[in-house]
Length: 596
Image (tube, rainbow, N blue to C red; front, side, top):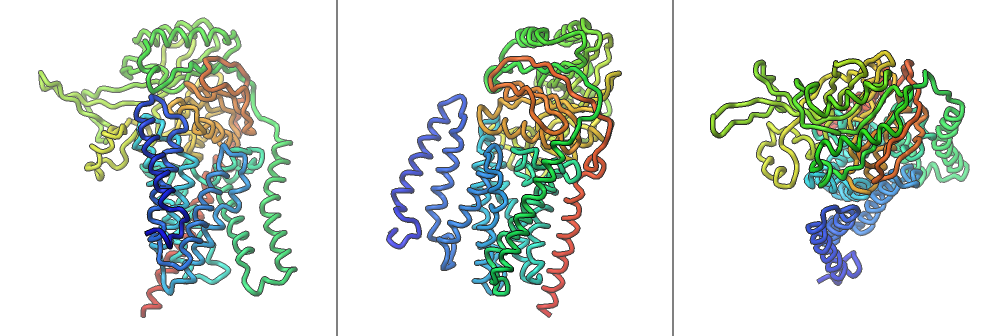
């Protein structure tokens, strides 16, 4: 039955992969924490599906070769992404997939959207598995499917649109559609409820922030453009048409590609070596309490947690300390309107009153009960008392607060970006029929209240933005803190949800890019994972270890200057949208004219 299969030893491979999938599933079912097991599960699971369908994957005569090329693209994208040190692979990662698309276009008389989808989807699933398998360790297993299989499907959209558009584009311009469509996709993916911008191409350079100091002008979209341009030029060089076959022309094209890749790096290294931080020194203490979030953090008494926080804090606090920073959801659940009266907050206020310059910034889990003026929002929840029938409307917040020495005023900030599946059920009013499945798989169907502006916390020392976990992935969103006056940013997070995997390492490396884009120093407090200070060049300083209960003290500079990126945001993304619209209109008009 498998005699003429394009996959050698197909039956033994299927038995092996099926056995691995079943065994790892059993292990995950019985283990409290999974660590790297989801990677093995997803690789075996997807490998089983692809090998089982390989012979029927396509009717094209080159099916086996095209499947191998699309796999290669997925592997290059995965191994070129942080925390792998092989970042230069990103400059060639799309080349095999572009070869697949060209082969399909050359073999098909018309548009072959379904063929392009199948091969590109496979490549993007491989990339998503390698880079983000760790999402399965979070509280919601459903979120891992959103992050991997659904996100891979979304990634095929710009590639398919490129395939459609190239049919009516001149040879020298057809790959502009690929670049513009991909960057448009990345831009739009930052701005809807199923947002998962972790794999934005420009994030690849988080492994080497000294290479992209020019992000202060372009943001991560500059990195995306750089990668896409390099891939297109290298592909064009490899797939050279007859007019390029002369040695001199090939050599010139090779030099151009080398210049495109190396020149931005050299300019960035020069900027990195000559950049001098701006602003005044401010002493900060960051606490990493180290509570395992799945089974420990929310079961331990809050007063036991408080004792650890206070003990760690006092080990580093001085009379010159201006800020003490605790991680995301350090305490809760508290009534927002009664925060100052809670015993934990009062004890923390007593602590900071011992230090005349001190402010405490920390994440909390809070809620608000509405008596009148109930907002018309999907995040408002309704609770009915079974005995009295009384209805209560309330709203939950993943929030940050600032307490200040000698003051009883509490500044309050509500998180504005949530992880799809784990923290928010996207488009719940439309996809209401999926709610039982999401709830069964461990996701959440309830939302959180938020606020429209990134308002920083204010004091005589300066203004600080409090970016809560996932918010630090969004460049233009994050820049909102600075546009509203923040002199520095504190990132409070709970990276222990992902266990000891690349997830928490990627997260802190992405913070380096935010520091460069805004030229704002960062104090980062993680429940566990990595806490650290980051300077305005994106260097990570005094990084803590995973599963380490510790407090660290350091000075960061409070800056008042605004970068080009802070002022203009993702302008390259907006240019890409405009270009994509023009190209799609051109395709539509020429298509109509062709039919007429």
